[in-house]
Length: 327
Image (tube, rainbow, N blue to C red; front, side, top):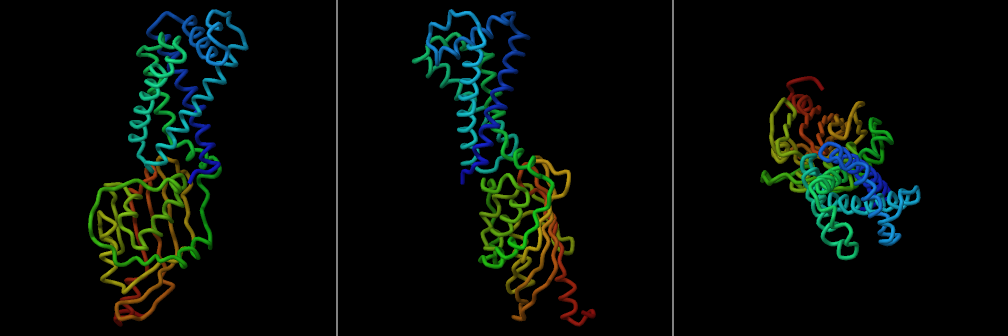
């Protein structure tokens, strides 16, 4: 759902994209034209004329014009960035390259709206139909498409451990059986946007969904080239393989979260997350068990799980049940 943080993310995206796109346009003007500062004054007057009327186009530059033009520029930037963020929200978690591509496409669309739509009301903008203005719009779209809400969350404490008993209680009260997952394979999708900015929340939501079981839903959290190393060093390439293996070991099994920890030094581009707790369920003969310790390690890149390592006490417990070792 959209939250207050979502609005903050849109404001951050709009201010950053508006500033960086303007800087890019200034650098392009400086590099490829000899029109500065006249062209900057021209565009400032044109922006101010939206609010003050076309008579401003011939006015002398003043602090008032700079202020009005700046306020309009950033108001429109925030509005456009908010729409781009909504697009990202609707499409779910995208990798960085996908965000930049969709952002560039949105920037191109905004250029068409501004230069060919708004000119029906503000015809003086037709003189800005040029490659440099188009490029600045592409830059704007790409910057606005970045995960600015993630940066907001990281500033609030990106490397702190997410440790809660509530997570474990939540897992206990949900239909989160691991088994049986069907070993079907579908293309990877993107993680839901309500957890996309928090590595610990991504992992806990992934575990919750995979334990429903909902393999298609869980695949939205993983990269297409995920590498899985399961107990005993078993290499896997699809999350359904984990459930297929578990089906040979347990009648059913659930996880009770104890804590989820994000390793210090994490960034939005890459984070390492540990989820620790205990397993409980039934062995194939129907005998119940609980307190089976587990540790999962995950590597997230651009919010998608690219590596998953799993350890637990099950092998030792099975050996003890078979009389091969002392409990």
